Length: 141
Image (cartoon, rainbow, N blue to C red; front, side, top):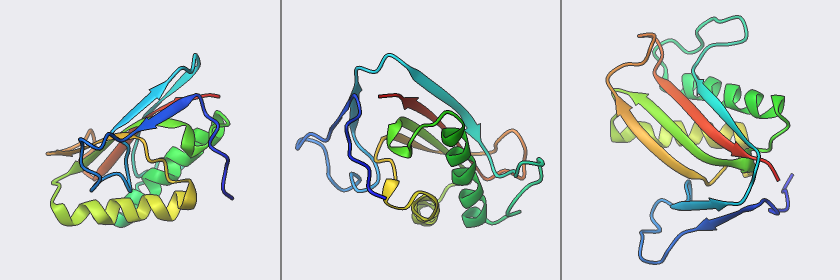
């Protein structure tokens, strides 16, 4: 379902910055929203706390994006309301980028948030079995 984009935000992708990444992110998001939600880092555990996808980046990314989607639903926010997302990946290598974004597109479909984003390779997360963690900042119209 395509949602009309009438959020109190402006996506800015200046011609002076590369368009190579703007299919998955936006360089700048400007908002006048007065209500924000901050979603804590979501990891690959299900509602019982059990790890999903041991050692599998794609399976973990699916669960992480699903958890992010559940957090958005809990506050009645569309994925397009995300203005900032941080993606942390253990032992990152370039091949993992498409794997992780493919999982995000699988979960969100056409509502993939082309938001301001930071993708960070890290040595480890709080639990050594977690491979991916994503946090987000959300606006409300």
